[in-house]
Length: 300
Ligand SMILES: Nc1ncnc2c1ncn2[C@@H]1O[C@H](COP(=O)(O)OP(=O)(O)O)[C@@H](O)[C@H]1O
Ligand SMILES: [Mg+2]
Image (cartoon, rainbow, N blue to C red; front, side, top):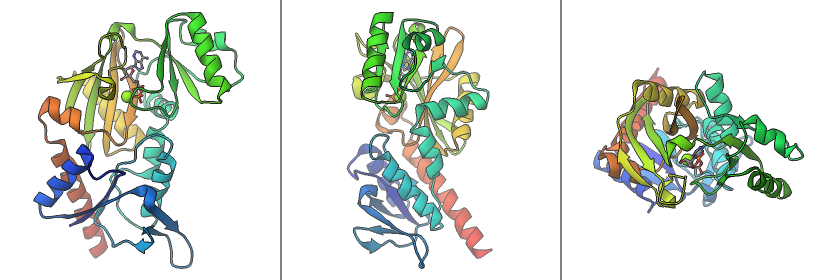
């Protein structure tokens, strides 16, 4: 089969693992940097050009769009592939939702999942009201489009919360205020969902002196057995956002597990290392399944 991976960096562990696994199974894989794609719409229909040339047809496309400033371009490319009739493992609209922490929590809450108390308001809003909405200090402040822990702050006091909110408002950033789940003691859970199954799960622990467990910030990971409730939550969160491949983050609070966020392009290095599960293999199997469906429907 002929697969395409939309990824900024072919040398990245996750991309490399998926390419190697697919090639070992006899597939051909093209890794495309979505920032080098140009999109064309007109009499010839929607097309994606790569470095100025037309791309061949693919049996399945795996988007690996990083959240951050370039996500919007990546999502536009995914949607163009969809418009041109390609089968994408994760839909562009779902990636768009996953890149927005507020949208993710809204979809999760709509699906009946428990989420931390969270407040959002327009830039000019009353700071105290926002802080009180989530139960008062200590509170967490989060950039809506942050990733890898970089946009997540802990405000231990009202004064700290007010000045951090003022700073976000000053630069016009969209942010959330959230209750601080102190009882998690710097730990959270990452469930890797592939094709409607939790294929691997790890618990991440923050490095000393931090409350953020992101592996990019020096957090450590170990395999974990999820409770039935946690497993169900992870699956329902991925489904609510519409993702076939998702890294679902949960936090264990005194009132049970809460959904933190959903990642549409979860990293594989940490979870494969901690759990020894072949997550890349599960993703390639899903691509094969998707491709067979496409071929079947093309014949029909
Ligand atoms: N409400 C919270 N209470 C306690 N810790 C939190 C809370 N929200 C996030 N964290 C910690 O901060 C980390 C990063 O937050 P997250 O919402 O996942 O943002 P990012 O997209 O930057 O990873 C989480 O993995 C978790 O360890
Ligand atoms: Mg996270």
